[in-house]
Structures are given as C-alpha cells and as structure tokens.
Length: 401
Ligand SMILES: Nc1ncnc2c1ncn2[C@@H]1O[C@H](COP(=O)(O)OP(=O)(O)OP(=O)(O)O)[C@@H](O)[C@H]1O
Ligand SMILES: [Mg+2]
Image (cartoon, rainbow, N blue to C red; front, top):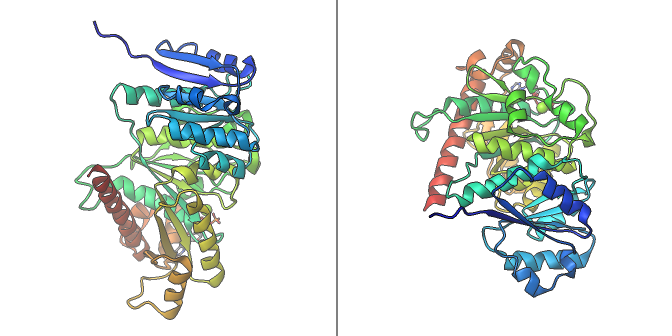
C-alpha cells in the first residue's frame, strides 16, 4: 500500500504565541506535519541545526540586529538540504536594509511575525503549497518577472511597461511558435500610477484595499481584482485615490508577484520612483530589469545608481537599457559611447520620439498595437517585445541544458 508522504514544517520561536498562531493558520492542512521548538536559532547548537535538514519548511523568529542570530542562520543555510525553504519571521516594520541582511544570510523569505489573527495565513499557505507541488513531483510554474524603472520622472517608463506587456501578449516573433504568452501587468507606482488611464480602465482600488486592510492577497483576490482586456492582457492598476507610500508591506508585494508568476508567463511591473522597502521582493525576484532613460547627463547618472541598487543583491540580474525619445543611431556618437561607459552596459533598445503616436494612444486609452501599430514608436515597441521573447526563450533553453 502506498503511504502518503506528509509535508513537514518546523517552527522555532521563543514562547508559544508565534508557534500557536502558525499551527492555527495551518489547522486545515491535513497533509502537513508541524513540529515546534520553544527556543531561538541562536540558542541551538550545530548538531541540533544539522538535524533539521529534512524539513520542507523551517520558520524561525529572527532579529537581524543580533549577530548571533545571523551566524546561526548561516550555519542553518550551510547545512540545509536543497529542498528546504527557510522563512525568517521578523518584526512587521523591518527596514529594507535589515530584510536585506536576512536574505544575504541565505533566507528564502522574510515574513512578518504572526499576530494570532491569521494575518499571514495566505502567504504561509502559498509557501507550503509550493513545497507540496515540488514534493509530489509537479513543477511550480514560474513566469518571468520584468521590472520597468525610470531614470527620471516622465521619461516614458509607463509607456514601455504598458506596451511591452501588450506586445508580449501578441506572442509575435520566431521564438513564440504561435503560442500566446499569458501576461500580467502590475502598476506598483502606488501613488502616481497611470496605467489605468493609459488603458482607459475604470477605477480599481484593489491595491488601496490591500494597503488599508493589510491583508496578504491570494489567487482569488487577485483574479477578482484584475481587469482582463480583449487582447488577453490582465491588469492590476494603481489606486485612483491616495494611498500613503509606506502602507504596502513587502510580504503583500511578494504574494502578489509569486501568485501571479504561478499562472502567468510574464509579469511586467511598472515600478514606483521611490525606493521604498516593499520593492525588495521585486528586486530579489526579477528575471530582467528595464531602465528607461534619455541621454541627459542627470538621467544617465541616475540610471547608473538605479542599476547599482537593483544588482547589489541580484548580481546576475540582466539589465536592459531602453533609450526613449531617440531613434537608434546608425553610428553612435561620443555622447552615446560615454553614456554606455557610465552605465557599464550597451544601449540596447531605442524608442523614437513620436508624440503623434504616443498622444494618439493616450487619447484613445489604447496600447500602440491598436492605436498606432505602423507608427515608428509602435514598431519599435514591437521590436522590444520580440527581443524580450527571444531573450527569454534562449535563457530557458540554456537553463534546460
Ligand atoms: N517615445 C515617445 N515619444 C513621444 N512621447 C512619448 C514617448 N514616450 C512617452 N511619451 C509621452 O511622455 C509622457 C510621459 O510618459 P510616461 O507616463 O510613460 O512616463 P513615466 O516615466 O511613466 O512618467 P511618470 O514619472 O509620470 O511615471 C506621456 O504623455 C507619453 O505619452
Ligand atoms: Mg509612470
């Protein structure tokens, strides 16, 4: 008789409050065994830490300020099996640099400590299910995450995010083999997002709701909140009313991205200008970053700072520079060569200055593929999407070798 393989989770926390809240959150998961240890990682010796290698998920209370905690995490990281997911439970107000210290130490996820009201259930369940899929031999679908950022306000990053997502949906190019990728577009420019007006969407307040009630979104919430356009593109727009910038949390943003990646082939994110703490999950997870810039000295310098920020924790992150408002030159000038040197990268993509097409699309609330497909800007966007599709196909082929 085949025995059912149970998933296993270990919770390490001093006092029973945290462990009880987690056990409660998972009370409906009958194929999950939860063990608890009433202590801290730092108090456990190397032998005890090595004995934990067989758990699918280990959740532990962590304080990144404490160097003995960080050392214990490093011991755990070097002794864990490849299949174990490490989740640090930290104070909900943890700063970007402290969350970074935990991920640098090798932690897979940083979640806020549960408060006993089930607040983080969705995020935890998602993690545990992901492990379950791996254990039952199923592969977890991981769509490609593309973050689009801007070197200065108004340079055209929303235009790029909207039209890249729209054109990816069309699945053109020799690498797509006739299949149309599923694409989600997320406006994380929480306060000044304009994707809703670029695509003439009605008011959408899902992100405002998350910011206000602090819940961690699950797949049902996202499906209900996203608008599906006739092209197949699904959009999560920014709120139409004001939301304080610090009202979103990293675990909420991580849940949005992880959930969408499970059902979409591409997730394109229009990034906020401010480098707030909750963009960390995007920095960690991005498969590709596009920085939109022009050739002014200040934009190029800011572009370099942004690239440094994004690649600091994700050294292998491919960064594509998109030069907006300029035709691709036949011969690069000294200015272009100097900019490429400052950026330490090729100026990969060029989008011509084309106010007629840009304004026409904006006025109609349609992407360029509908409003001005044959315009210079419309064609350049189509090339950008084709290059992105080809790049992903090559990356997937190389990874499979
Ligand atoms: N290549 C282009 N040619 C002409 N106009 C353009 C081009 N790209 C963008 N625009 C126009 O520039 C304006 C700003 O573009 P967009 O909103 O995409 O920039 P942004 O970087 O997202 O700005 P924000 O800082 O407001 O988020 C829009 O009116 C858009 O139609
Ligand atoms: Mg914008």
